[in-house]
Amino acid sequence: MSIKNKLQYIIKSSLPVDIDLDRIVIDIPKDKNNGDYSTNIAFLLTKELKSNPLMIANSIKDKISDEIIERVEVAEPGFINIFLDKKFLLDNINVIIEKNRNYGRSSYGNKNKVNIEYVSANPTGTLHIGHGRGAVYGDNLSSIMSFAGYDVTREYYINDAGNQMYNLGISIRERYKELCGMPFEIPENGYHGKEIIGIAKKIYDFYKDSKLDESVDFFRQEGLDVLLDGIKKDLDKFRVNFDVFTSEKSLYDRGLVDTVLDGLKNSGKCYIEDGALWLKTSDLYDEKDRVLIKKDGNYTYLLPDIAYHSDKLDRGFDQLIDVFGADHHGYIHRLKSSLEFLGYDSSKLDIRILQMVRLLRNGEEVKLSKRTGKTITLNELIEEVGINAARYFFASKSLDTQMDFDLDLAVKNSNDNPVYYIEYANARISSIIRSYRGEIATKFCTIDSELAYTIMNKLIEFEDVVVSSATRGLPHLIANYLYELAGLFHSYYSSEKIITEDEIYTQERISFIKAIQIVMNNAARLIGIILREEM
Image (cartoon, rainbow, N blue to C red):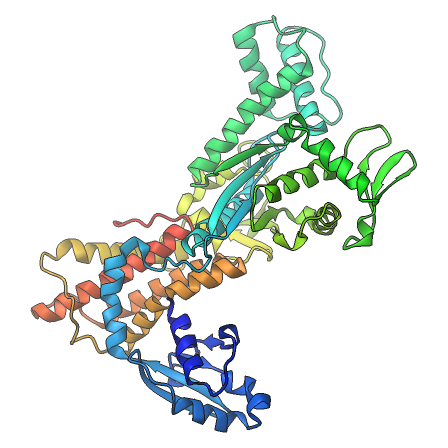
C-alpha cells in the first residue's frame, strides 16, 4: 500500500462521518513547514457537519493516531498537515533494499486488461523522430502501467492494405523493371526513397529478370517484409518492443471488415449520397458525417480502423489506449461514434495525441538530414545523441505539448544535461559502494539531517508517483521524479561525508545511498533508460 493510500485510511478512520476514500485528497506541500503531507478534507465536510473548516480540522486532528505519524498540525483556514515518523522513514530503507527491483510495484491496476497501441507507422519507409516520440510514450506508459498492476498488451498495427501499400508495390516493381533494363515509370503517388531502390535491387540480385510477370502484390509483400523488418530492428535498438503485431490485411482476410460494414448498415446510421456510402457520425460526437465507401467502390481508412478497434474490444480489453500523431485529432470523435453504433462502450477508447518535435542545433531548427537531405530518421538521432538521451528527452515532456529537442544539450558532458546529471548521480553511488568492503546497516541511529529526511520522503513517494503516472497517462512524472531524486542525492553528497572512520555511521549511509540507487534505477527502467555505473 502506498503512503498516500495509508494516510487516506488513517484519516478516514478519524472522521465523524463515513465517506468514500477517493474524496480524501492527500497532497505534498511545497513548504516543508506545512508537513510532509497535507489534506483539505475539512473543507469538504463543512456542509455535512455544519461547521467551519478550522473547527472541523481541529476535531479530526485530535483523532488522528498511527505509528507512522510523528505529529499533526492544523493551519488556517483548515488544512491538516501531517509529519511522518522518522523511524518509519528510516525503516523504509530496509524495505527498499529487500524489495529491490520490485520497490514501487503495486497491484493498483487490479490486473485490468489494457491494450496500448503505439508507433504503427506505415511500412513504406523508415522511422523518423516523430515516431520516436510516440514510441517512447507508448513504451513508457506500458512499463509504468504494468508496474502499477495493470495487465498490459503492447500492440503495433501494420497498415499493410490500401492504396499506400499498392503504391509501394508499384514503386518497387518499377525500380525492378529499371534494373532489368525495361522502361519504367514511378507513379505520381509512388515512393522515391533509397530504401525502395534497395528492395528492388535485392529482388533483382536474387531473381534476376524472372519476376517481370509477377503481380504488384508480390512486390508489395517483398517491400513489406523488408521495411517492417527494418522498423522492428530500429525499435528494438531503441529498447521498444511489442507483444502483438496486427495486420490490417488480416482483418480483411478474416472477414472482420465486411462484418463491421454489415453491422453499421444494420444500425440504421448509413446512407448513400453522391454514389458514396456515408456514416452518420454527426449523430453522436463528430462534427460531420464520414464516408465509409467511396463512389469508386474503395473503402476509406475509417472502415478497417473501426474493424480493428472492434476486434480489440472483442479480445476482452477493459481499456484501449491509442497513441496518434497530431494530424489524427479529428479521428477521435468519428471512431468513438462508429463504435457506439456497433454497440460498444466507446469510453473504453482513450486516444492520446502527440505533438510535433523540433530539433535544435546552435539554437536553430534542424529540419533535414545532412546525410540524405530528407527528414531526420530515428536511427540518425540515436547515433548522434545515444539511446538514453533520446529516450529521456522524449520522456521528460508531456505528450500534448510541442517540444524542442536540443541536440547540443543532449550530448553535453555537464550538469546542464539532465541525462548526464542523473547518470553522474548513479555513477557516484556505484563508485562509493564498489570501494566499500564492510557490512551494511539494518538499524539506523545516526542519520538525522533534514536533507536525509527529505530524501527519505522522496523515496517513499515513489509508488504514488508510479500510480499517478499510470492512471493519468503521464510518463513524464517519472522522468521528473528521477531528475529530482538525482538532484537531492548530489546535494547530500556535497553536504555530508558517506565513508568515515566511524563504522556504524558509514554502514548506515551505505545502506541509505544503496536505497537511493535502487529507486533511481527502478524509475529509470520505467522510462527505458539503463544508467551507467561508471563515467
